[in-house]
Image 1: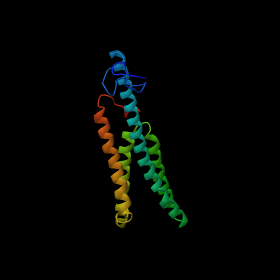
Image 2: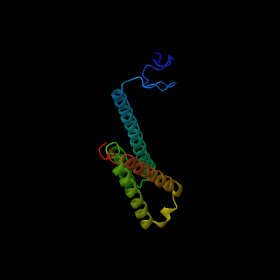
Image 3: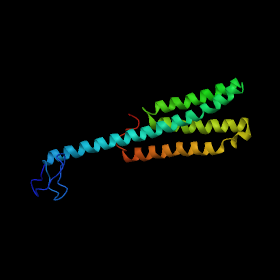
Image 4: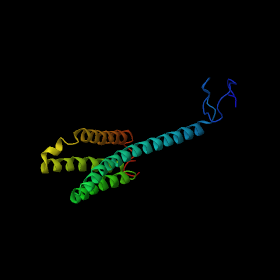
Length: 164
């Protein structure tokens, strides 16, 4: 397709000529096309955010599966049940994050800090055990919450995260 104004070859889907900036569609259609593109962009951004938050929670759940197998191999069934329950809660929050990512991430942070604190009260040495992993997990959970807050502020009139 060629631009009717400058006659240069352009993309047939273009709404403006990239060379002379001539409008190639009516103003009404232009507004409609721009609105549709913004909606698609918002939808893509929303899906990426939800995917990121969901994956963070699923990874935390997966990390809690590792000690489950260690406890089972040592015959410590009670600890295995506890770790399995914790892993299940985070995996469940990961699945829930596809519907309500903000609430799932907030719940994940609260749950992780609560469980780490309870573990420290029961066994103070547990604070040092796996410290690097705990720091990484907390970092990614807070990173997800920061992204959620940014996303909610950007689209403050559209409560899109609560009605995903």
